[in-house]
Image 1 (cartoon, rainbow, N blue to C red):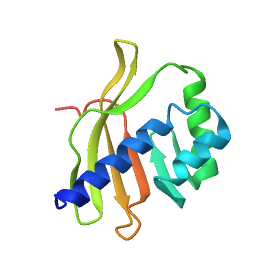
Image 2 (cartoon, helix red, strand yellow):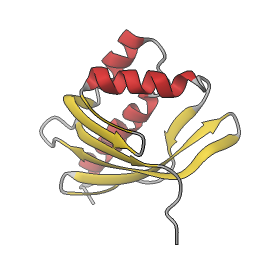
Image 3 (cartoon, rainbow, N blue to C red):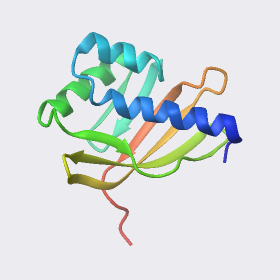
Image 4 (tube, rainbow, N blue to C red):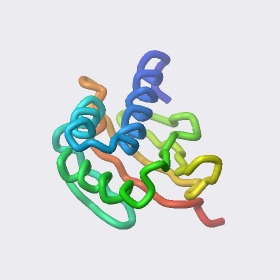
Length: 127
Protein backbone atom coordinates (compact mmCIF):
# COMPACT_ATOMS: atom_id res chain seq x y z
CA UNK A 1 0.00 0.00 0.00
CA UNK A 2 1.09 3.55 -0.54
CA UNK A 3 2.17 5.70 2.40
CA UNK A 4 -0.35 7.84 4.36
CA UNK A 5 -0.49 11.13 2.44
CA UNK A 6 0.14 9.47 -0.92
CA UNK A 7 -2.66 6.95 -0.28
CA UNK A 8 -5.05 9.74 0.67
CA UNK A 9 -4.14 11.76 -2.44
CA UNK A 10 -4.58 8.69 -4.67
CA UNK A 11 -8.00 7.94 -3.16
CA UNK A 12 -9.01 11.58 -3.75
CA UNK A 13 -7.86 11.35 -7.38
CA UNK A 14 -9.82 8.14 -7.88
CA UNK A 15 -12.92 9.70 -6.31
CA UNK A 16 -12.52 12.73 -8.60
CA UNK A 17 -12.33 10.37 -11.59
CA UNK A 18 -15.50 8.54 -10.50
CA UNK A 19 -17.25 11.91 -10.12
CA UNK A 20 -16.46 12.70 -13.77
CA UNK A 21 -19.08 10.11 -14.75
CA UNK A 22 -21.77 12.43 -13.33
CA UNK A 23 -20.65 15.54 -15.24
CA UNK A 24 -23.06 15.93 -18.14
CA UNK A 25 -21.71 19.06 -19.88
CA UNK A 26 -18.85 18.25 -22.28
CA UNK A 27 -16.45 21.11 -21.52
CA UNK A 28 -16.93 20.68 -17.77
CA UNK A 29 -16.33 16.91 -18.07
CA UNK A 30 -13.13 17.51 -20.07
CA UNK A 31 -11.92 19.94 -17.41
CA UNK A 32 -12.81 17.56 -14.58
CA UNK A 33 -10.98 14.70 -16.32
CA UNK A 34 -7.90 16.89 -16.87
CA UNK A 35 -7.67 17.31 -13.08
CA UNK A 36 -7.40 13.56 -12.44
CA UNK A 37 -6.05 11.82 -15.59
CA UNK A 38 -3.22 12.47 -18.02
CA UNK A 39 -3.93 13.87 -21.49
CA UNK A 40 -2.98 10.50 -23.00
CA UNK A 41 -4.99 8.40 -20.53
CA UNK A 42 -5.46 4.80 -21.67
CA UNK A 43 -8.86 3.38 -20.75
CA UNK A 44 -10.29 -0.10 -21.32
CA UNK A 45 -13.33 -2.00 -20.14
CA UNK A 46 -15.08 -5.06 -21.59
CA UNK A 47 -16.82 -2.88 -24.19
CA UNK A 48 -14.12 -0.42 -25.35
CA UNK A 49 -10.43 0.51 -25.43
CA UNK A 50 -9.44 4.12 -26.03
CA UNK A 51 -6.78 6.75 -25.50
CA UNK A 52 -7.00 10.41 -24.51
CA UNK A 53 -9.31 12.69 -22.57
CA UNK A 54 -11.58 13.55 -25.53
CA UNK A 55 -12.19 9.85 -26.28
CA UNK A 56 -12.80 9.02 -22.60
CA UNK A 57 -15.13 12.00 -22.22
CA UNK A 58 -17.12 10.92 -25.29
CA UNK A 59 -17.35 7.36 -23.94
CA UNK A 60 -18.61 8.65 -20.59
CA UNK A 61 -21.24 10.74 -22.40
CA UNK A 62 -22.48 7.73 -24.36
CA UNK A 63 -22.64 5.48 -21.29
CA UNK A 64 -24.33 8.01 -19.03
CA UNK A 65 -26.89 9.13 -21.64
CA UNK A 66 -28.92 5.99 -20.90
CA UNK A 67 -29.00 6.69 -17.13
CA UNK A 68 -28.18 10.35 -16.42
CA UNK A 69 -29.23 10.05 -12.76
CA UNK A 70 -26.97 7.05 -12.07
CA UNK A 71 -23.85 7.50 -9.95
CA UNK A 72 -20.57 5.62 -10.12
CA UNK A 73 -18.83 5.61 -6.75
CA UNK A 74 -15.90 3.89 -5.13
CA UNK A 75 -17.19 1.37 -2.58
CA UNK A 76 -13.92 -0.08 -1.24
CA UNK A 77 -10.62 1.16 0.05
CA UNK A 78 -7.90 1.73 -2.54
CA UNK A 79 -5.36 -1.11 -2.55
CA UNK A 80 -2.10 0.20 -4.02
CA UNK A 81 1.57 -0.56 -4.47
CA UNK A 82 4.23 1.12 -6.55
CA UNK A 83 2.26 2.89 -9.30
CA UNK A 84 -0.65 0.42 -9.48
CA UNK A 85 -3.91 0.30 -7.58
CA UNK A 86 -7.28 -1.40 -7.55
CA UNK A 87 -10.59 -0.39 -6.06
CA UNK A 88 -14.17 -1.56 -6.08
CA UNK A 89 -16.96 0.56 -7.46
CA UNK A 90 -20.64 0.29 -8.11
CA UNK A 91 -23.25 1.96 -10.26
CA UNK A 92 -26.33 3.12 -8.39
CA UNK A 93 -29.51 4.79 -9.52
CA UNK A 94 -31.17 6.10 -6.38
CA UNK A 95 -31.22 3.23 -3.90
CA UNK A 96 -31.00 0.57 -6.61
CA UNK A 97 -27.59 -0.94 -7.33
CA UNK A 98 -27.39 -1.49 -11.07
CA UNK A 99 -23.88 -2.92 -11.25
CA UNK A 100 -22.16 -4.15 -8.10
CA UNK A 101 -18.91 -5.91 -7.36
CA UNK A 102 -17.06 -4.11 -10.14
CA UNK A 103 -13.37 -3.27 -9.98
CA UNK A 104 -10.97 -0.91 -11.71
CA UNK A 105 -7.23 -1.33 -11.88
CA UNK A 106 -5.33 1.91 -12.38
CA UNK A 107 -1.82 3.14 -12.90
CA UNK A 108 -0.74 6.64 -11.93
CA UNK A 109 2.13 9.02 -12.45
CA UNK A 110 3.72 9.58 -9.02
CA UNK A 111 5.15 12.98 -9.94
CA UNK A 112 1.77 14.47 -10.89
CA UNK A 113 -0.60 12.08 -9.10
CA UNK A 114 -2.67 11.76 -12.28
CA UNK A 115 -4.07 8.45 -13.51
CA UNK A 116 -2.34 7.17 -16.67
CA UNK A 117 -4.30 3.95 -17.24
CA UNK A 118 -7.70 2.67 -16.16
CA UNK A 119 -8.85 -0.90 -16.75
CA UNK A 120 -12.39 -1.67 -15.70
CA UNK A 121 -14.08 -4.99 -14.99
CA UNK A 122 -17.86 -5.28 -14.64
CA UNK A 123 -19.60 -7.29 -11.95
CA UNK A 124 -18.26 -9.68 -9.34
CA UNK A 125 -15.46 -12.13 -9.98
CA UNK A 126 -16.81 -15.66 -10.29
CA UNK A 127 -15.67 -18.27 -7.73
